Structure formats: structure tokens, C-alpha cells
Amino acid sequence: MEWVLRIAVAGEFLGHGAFALQGKPQWVGWISKLTGADAALAGQLLLLVGLLDLLVALIVLVKPVRAAMLWAAFWGFWTALVRPLVGEPIWDFVERWANWGAPLALLLLYGWPKSAREWLRRS
Image (cartoon, rainbow, N blue to C red; front, side):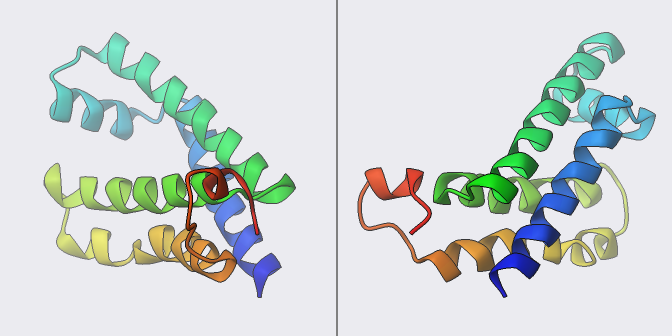
């Protein structure tokens, strides 16, 4: 079960990271709409997001620390929620529940940390 979740989360973040590095025009537009940034700045922000997504994918595969799982769950939820915030149908949000559910499930599988130090350990 652990490896199924790790591969699923890594695949999600690898795919999103690749789209972000390509500068997916729709996503640049969403960033501009939500932040008021011009297209050039939005593209740079998207590049940073893409690099972070790739880093999360790598961490999940190599050493899935709890802090990365929490970030992945938060970011998966936020990026799903962005869709209706920019005018897409609510179902675009609903269909992406696995984007935050899989990293949250992996985090819960490892156990909720009892100390700050445990956020940087897998188990």
C-alpha cells in the first residue's frame, strides 16, 4: 500500500511539475488572475512551482518525509481548489480530490508526528 501511494503522489507531482516547467498557458493565466501579476512574473512563479513539484516527487520516491507529505496534501488541495476560484466548474475541484487525498493517506500511514523533529522523519 505504501508504494502504491508513493508512486501515485510522485506521478502527480512529476506530471504537474512537467506542465509547470513547460509554462502551461492556462496556469500562467490563473496565476495572473489570482495574484494580479503580469504574464512574465506569473511564468516565473510557475517555473518555481514546477521545480518544487519535481522536488516533492523526488522526495516521495527517495525518502518520503512527513513534512513533504503535508505540503503535498496542502498543495494538492489548493491546486484543485484553484479551478473553481478562476471560474472552472466545481467538478474540476471534486475530480482532483485524489491529488490531496493520496499524500494525506500516505502521511497518515506513516503516523501523525508527535514532535517537530518527526516532521522530517518518515517513521
